[in-house]
Amino acid sequence: MRVPAGPGAFDRTPVRLGAFAVGLALVFGATWGLGGALGGPPGPAAEARSGGHDDGGEAAHGTGHSGAPAAGDQPVDLPGGLQLAQDGYRLEPLTAGLSTDHPTDLRFRIVGPDGAPVTRYVETHEKELHLIVARRDLTGFQHVHPTRAADGTWSTPLRALAGGGQYRVFADFRPAGLDRALTLGVDLPAAGTYRPVELPAPTRTAGVDGYTVRLDGELRPGAEARLTLTVERDGRPVTDLEPYLGAYGHLVVLRAGDLAYLHVHPDGAPGDGRTAPGPAITFHTSVPSAGGYRLYLDFQHAGRVRTAEFTMFAGAVPTPADQPAGTTPGAGTTPGAGEHGGPGHGHD
Image (cartoon, rainbow, N blue to C red; front, side, top):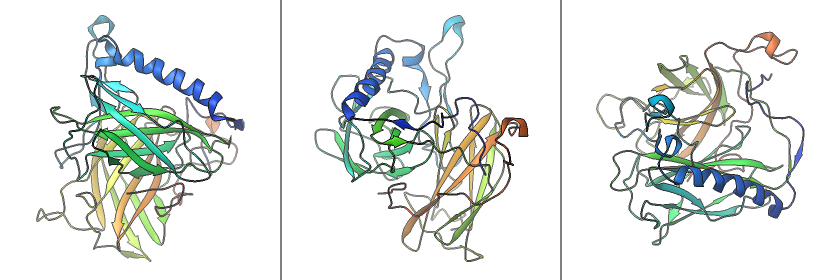
């Protein structure tokens, strides 16, 4: 069963993206126009602070940080991933788009305030940079870790879902000399006949590769929420989760509509003497507004990383009048959740 993604829900009409040349002219015209606005003279959008990795390891960061004053001296508070540039740093894609036929070598760099590619980073959760990719309808989630060349160019193979569409690419990193992590985002196209998928109904359980993950807790707009995810396999609690990137689980949250980004982490860490390796993983996070959110839990067991996916609503759940006939929000098994490695999931 499905519910609409609320304001900003996707048009269900098939969209033919066509040749890359036409698509790229439109995409990069809009993208670099936005980048120019954000990367030019200081202003509310350019100076706003957005969320990234939490470096403390206990409670995850919120949705962003107050930045430069807007009109009327009101602070700007933007979630992560909505900007191409921030604090003088810019995400610069070097690859035209993604392919649905074979993995594309996605290349990009982070350009610093001095105009040169950044080559020095502070590791967060055992990596210099985390790359999150999702199609605009919140399918095709991938969390990968590109390789950086000496000249500051990052690269990683990526493949788009059949049908193509617009993909949001998030770079989550902390440059050396900056006291916090940044999350920058850019859209890339994949040619094909795009048929957006509706946001799945809210669910409390997700099945993936023989595992069942249960989600407890609620999202509250503008307030901290405690979320606990419990992992079982074949009906038995998993008590030997394996450390992955310095934690027993990683949770990415994307807001339906604009794909505002949160990357949160659990309480404690492996080997701290108090954090058990499952079955429960607890997170603290907050979301910036009411509406639909898609949650992606990465966990490792038996030597493999898997992703469990959920839909949650912050605030009031849409009423029946707002939903297609026959749709009822409630618990269920998340469709499309699966093991990493296919076109829709990735981890490196």
